[in-house]
Image 1 (cartoon, one colour):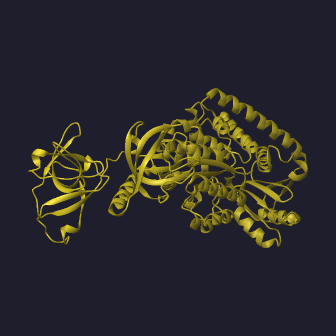
Image 2 (tube, rainbow, N blue to C red):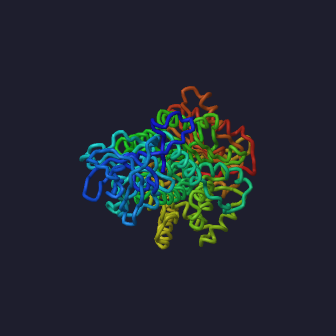
Image 3 (cartoon, one colour):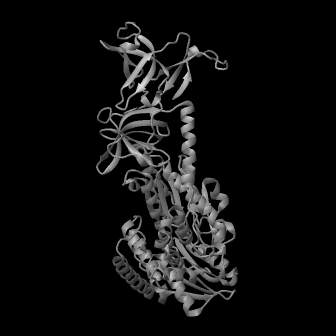
Length: 635
């Protein structure tokens, strides 16, 4: 029984030995009373064998004539009674309380709270938690309430299309009672009442929920797929991102994943997407919740373009207006670390949109870190791009859902081969993939198929297709192998046709450093708007020249207002070169980025010759490094 002192009790600091008479709140039930205690009651009926009295709207019983001592009562009379017995059938009997001088304590109803995870169809329950979403339909108002075990939808009806309980807002702590039913295949609570918690009750509930959420948000402690000293410094930061993402799901906030549209970007995003979908399904009573709370989209550029952020923000604001959702958590994968991302991030600062980045492009931490909630990048730990984003995100996915460990054994190798990583543990990753039935050639084919699919998907998610290609979340192993063979074969055919057109027109010169420079005019001698795109065309040409002539080699593929850059064995700093070019070529409008030795730049069409000449001059001054080799391609 929870009580609070009423006016008759005097100063709260004074000892008061007077007997207590309890005054029940209207919603109190039998769970709030005790045999032997005294209560204020009101007569609600008079019969020959006694009078019936009410202690609250839900607690009534008989004061038998044998206990009336000859007293007579009318309906509406107030009386102080003592609870004598609660019978097995729920009947309650009272006696008159022999008390004159007493103090009154108010009693608030303390319902039996049912955890969301324990709510069963057909039961009448009371749930205590936080409102995470309010959606007004053409019929009822749908409230989503989260407790320490999960999130459930609750339908409250005022009248068609009219907001029920308009005082209840997202973020409120509430007690919500009703009957659990199944609606269109989903578990849903049919609301009978909602009470917003206040004061100590709210504080206690908040503390309980925060503690439970923090505990449940903890990432799994998983052993690395492959022991790699260079990777160890990243694990703690990846665990923090996993913690943020799990907490985001528990709080009912949607998640939007943006990733670079290439093999490594897909190897990064697909495992994380599957891990989050599994966790969303675990948290939400709605089996279709993942479709509403998680969205993955590719980005063609290796940075967050204003076009992308405008689309994302518009989609999020529409979701908030139409579905009552919180604004999403933005997860950037295989892009997002550079100064070029800053305008898009600053656009999001006007709204409540947390941002986390996992990337291996050369970062500009001074430009972006203040705009991010988390930033994982090997460069920030003295490592480099040979640790691909796909390798990092496989570990991130396992921290979110360790049950995916076996399903992801081949993905780090696919990511590394797709981005041509020269990591010292690549052979170990390939051996690990061998335990899943893949050899090196098959892994390379998966990477080629992913790149090919990404090119034609353009800005679409293509979830089922890319999951089948990568064999993550795929339900048909034979379809996976047939699809990879088909797409990889088409990709190889298209690459060969493209290089046959380009190679006769490739220009070659030897720089003062001794490096071989190959330049290709992709505007006039390559097919545009087909596969392979300029980035892949340049990368394939470069790899062919390295195989033919060895290092050091630099390759530039250029068009009317862009250039794609690749190098092996030359110590280039492409991000720094871009900065210098933008300062030195007046009116050039130079922008771009990428890895240290793999990049793409844009410029004003009329200044192309000046930009390319200045770029070649800088490349000629770069030092040779036999151990430095490119590890990625850019579209």
